[in-house]
Length: 237
Image: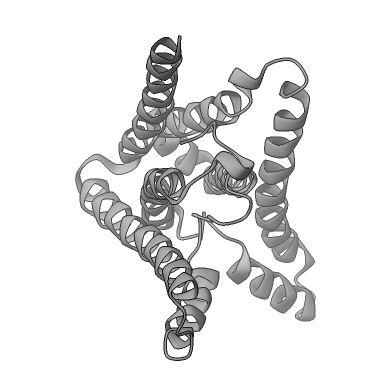
């Protein structure tokens, strides 16, 4: 799921990582918004608010929106930086380290998030945006840009294009490729929705502790991947 890349990746691998990470992003998206009334999985809306505040000469408020964008960018930068550095020493740890960092951030916010909200809610937003930038960059790298999990705008655009193409593509190989891509898009959308629904339901009772569920899902995912790899290696030997 995490380790296969390039020609060794299949639709099955992408479906697994898409379902796992989009589920996590769905939880973060809803829990983050309910906690601090900010979008915490993408920056499109923040950019619009940033421009609006600058136009109104509200530079300090505009700077806050700029920081939302910056921390998402920073997460993406750090994620790929770690992948490049670690790949020179250990292939096994390439994708484990970024996932552990993301999980640590989510666990920390689950425990101390309510305290941070009382002190400075922007710290929660910055942390979640950094974590989602980290995740989005990682899954983009792993899947060769076939999977993106932290926002749905591009997914619905691609889904609309591909559904319309079904009306015109008649060859079997073309249709098979389209069906695979549509299946992947629908999987991401479905698990993002499920994660968001679960995030909303649990936030109403346990508040930001719901982020611990997302962090646990990530840890279980890399443990499962590691165990499966070891079993395959043993069988190969």
